[in-house]
Length: 181
Image 1 (cartoon, rainbow, N blue to C red):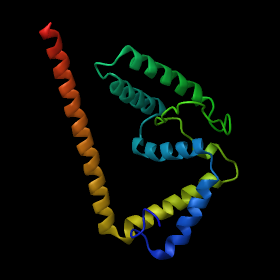
Image 2 (image 1 turned 45 degrees about the horizontal axis):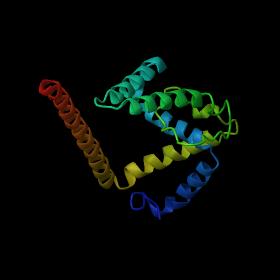
Image 3 (image 1 turned 30 degrees about the vertical axis):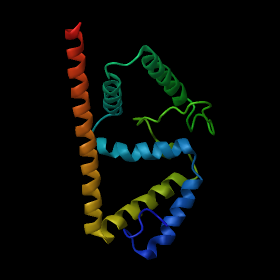
Image 4 (image 1 turned 180 degrees about the vertical axis):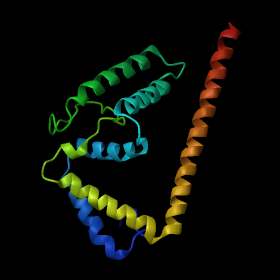
């Protein structure tokens, strides 16, 4: 039934279903802002400008991959241009805007403020459910939850290590290539 089955008490099923129903009535862009808002909790103590700079630095570092074709570089520039344009097309500025053609991947937004998008309280109500359910699943099967968190962190560590190794290999190959000429 649900991904969290086994992590919560069956008596909470109705609360999950109600939260899912609330989520269905929130614009897709606002859902992205909710996701961003939750992730931004990890940046407590930093200003919006500092967070924005961290995000831009990370994005820039990811783009510095060597060996890109001019076509790939041009495509990245176009994607960045579309992303800047789409920032203006998000709620509460514009509602129900859907991008035509290739979907521009979403990037964490330091300015995400989902609470400002609806005045009827639906975002606040959903956040209350999220808080209640997150508290419940971390306590109901505490050991199972700790293992899930541990394994999830291990997956991200392994992916990060693989990324670093791949970058080191690419750097090594790039340095060796001019020497062969």
